[in-house]
Length: 324
Length: 258
Figure 1 (cartoon, rainbow over the protein chains, first blue to last red):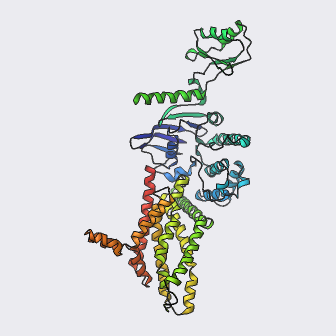
Figure 2: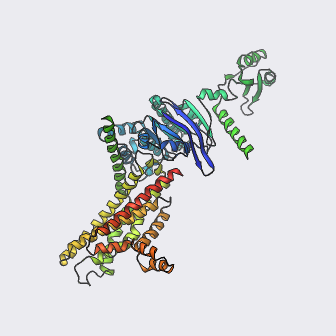
Figure 3: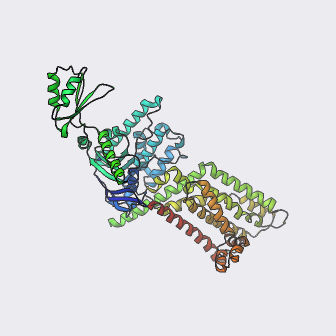
């Protein structure tokens, strides 16, 4: 269980994080979303005990991170931003160090280490110096360090960042890497409380069962991905692809239940948005049939996280613009 | 009972965390070129200074005074160079975040780093033993004085190290850490010297001047190197080390707040 109560961090007159209330129970993977500078990393650093909160408190598995720091840190696995590690050490040496500091010695330590090496597929680089490794490997080494002591609570600051999808030749391997990390997180989640910060909304869908959007240091929206998708204007929208459907679109837009119809200029896909999130699927189907439109593809939209994310951050920008 | 065992388990856990950092640091000295460079330069220049500047043979005396006389100056440059990375590197590389979120208390991390580095310097110092063999082969030196000098030299290195480690936590730049440490070590080395004393006396601050003079590393080292292992001199070095390490812990802790 990871819990924050009114957690805040103030630098001079600037609130990096303010009044953050989160509660992540075992079995939950919370995605912390937000634009750059929203306070994600600062929040995670406070929970991990690297930064001292200016107000409020954070509790990891019943241990206050300020008053009982050692017990809190024992219960927590932490992947800091950028996945730092000691570059001059070999992978095995680094993991040995982490195990020793965590009090994992002897057979238990060795067994845990073998497990992590296997799970994160570090076998081929075990004897290699960390600074000679690719970014993806380095991230996995740091991830292994965070999971080594089998902690009941986990904080992962951008776990798949640096698994760079731009290098053409490595594209396949890297997306696989990301997928593996997602699978790992899902696997870990069974009996653990996990917070993951990310930019990638795919990651939220792939690995998380709760989402919190923060902006300007404040929690804006929180819920399951499905709940958030409901807040999107795409929720219950109907999209279809059909040649020669301009008239049908015109007619659809005039329906009282329909807010608007948008046609993608690139692929010609039309999206019909409902008024006040109402159900318009039957209406759209009926009208398309009446107009004898030959539909190539028809889809009921669940809602889009991207859309909610943009909506929330736009609101915040509008607020700050007004305040200024 | 359970509370008691948990306290014991807690202590054992802490001991392991301390040991983990200590061993990693020590291991770091054995695999990084900087540390070997330190040892090689220390040994070479200690030898060179003794025989050329110290006129070891020409003096015709069986003692190691020309050898120990140059230690403060060697340490002045070499110890800040060895210690500049202690925290600056961790801050720049982001590993400080890793280290401080492990179940270890700040004082343990500070002490573990200090002890590993001190031990390493001690190792380099111990490797000067051929000097001792030579002087014993050539004559009949007072080995008590030599032992006291070795202890004094080791303590002085510890003081320089504590100062340098503490200043390393102030910055991400190893170069700045080095220059800061060099300047502060120089000040403490020569605190009793006219170079430092005269400006203070000119300002009319006799008390400050006297107080600073009593903090002179050089004076305390020379006192021990004469062969008198005085409690006051030893206590001076120990307190200097403790003071700077404590300051290091406080600065490290204050940084979390900011």
